[in-house]
Image 1 (cartoon, rainbow, N blue to C red):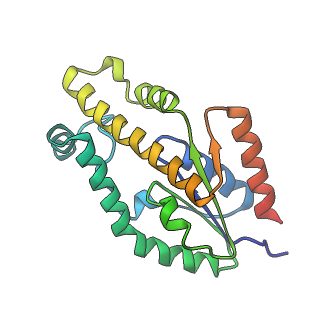
Image 2: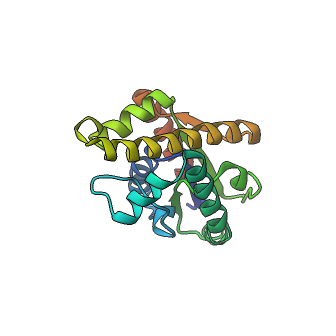
Length: 195
């Protein structure tokens, strides 16, 4: 039996759990997972090691400029992403696409009939704690801490923007700060994709 859906889009800011959820659902329903990070990488996180150009990027630019560049990067990626989503939505094989470049304001205009969309978010305190833990923030020198802090600020700004845009466009959001709720929502998505 063919599923009513052929594509699942998972959007959200950095470290909100998109990849983890995508891998779980992809495995459960037997669909491949595509990350937008692999389609065009923006200067990534300044850990575990910091490449010279990444350190220069975060140290020389303001948080506002860093976030502006992120948004421009996502806008530049969108035509290619839109084509990938369109192709996937016409396929019978199924595909999970996840990534920060899947902006809610872009997705809202798509509305492909066989695409299911969900956004992930959390409180800024939860995301900060997660990023500080992964980056081993407390063990870093002052310079590296400053780079990490700019990455965190950029990501929190992005989280706020994604939540606002999702609510404006009526897109589904899952709060990942509650693991039991996230598990229930993941099971619901899997069930929908299997229908």
